[in-house]
Length: 265
Ligand SMILES: NC(=O)c1ccc[n+]([C@@H]2O[C@H](COP(=O)([O-])OP(=O)(O)OC[C@H]3O[C@@H](n4cnc5c(N)ncnc54)[C@H](OP(=O)(O)O)[C@@H]3O)[C@@H](O)[C@H]2O)c1
Picture 1 (tube, rainbow, N blue to C red):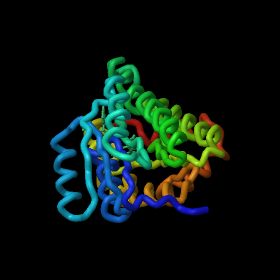
Picture 2: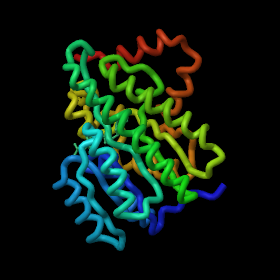
Picture 3: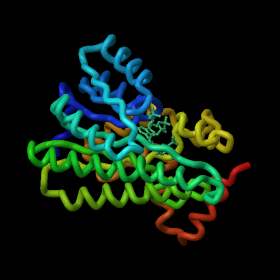
Picture 4: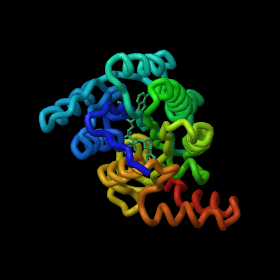
């Protein structure tokens, strides 16, 4: 099966102002020679990224500041992206979590997690799928999480949003298996990014603990798996083993072990 080739193609990546999205953007530009459309709320960070990429290579970066909590921004991102460039691939990466007992969070936080991690991903996947079908080619990568494969106490709504994103992406791939459009998911476990420092997860699992992979390494594995059109890829040996092994244990035991691993200090 031919691999995806991003050279001189346009790739839209959400959540590119930090962490994994930023690392994927840098890898895509440097190693795959892709042109990029990048989206997030922090415009200054996107401008820095554009400067860094354009000053060191021949690829072009376009910026669309977007708040994925706003449904009109999500639709606008699709419209502006296809008006701006001939988009070949989309990477739905933006996301965030709440760490702590579920009843301690404001309901508004949970709404926002579901808006960004699930609803925006579904909206953009479906809009671009129709667009790619008209063009006869295209590819979608949804960044889910190991929290979408096993329940994670103390990140319950995040885990629920990622279970939704995982089920949606795998199902969408099957619905469109004969369309020629590539639909893949990538489910990392801990990555040393702002998501951990912003949520306080770094107090349980410090950024430099073996629990967390480096964003650059995960980005490389994500792009490689996407190029191979993987149904679902999990980066890291221990994470792969975990995802494989949990099938053989009762669900209550898996949830109990996850509760112990994530129980706040
Ligand atoms: N870090 C982990 O341990 C881990 C593990 C598994 C999966 N993941 C997944 O990896 C993806 C990237 O997360 P990360 O770890 O790289 O975290 P991060 O460094 O905090 O990056 C999150 C990105 O999402 C963007 N974002 C958040 N809310 C947004 C909104 N309302 N509108 C637009 N953009 C928004 C942020 O940009 P702005 O704030 O500028 O808008 C930022 O660029 C997420 O889907 C996450 O669930 C992370």
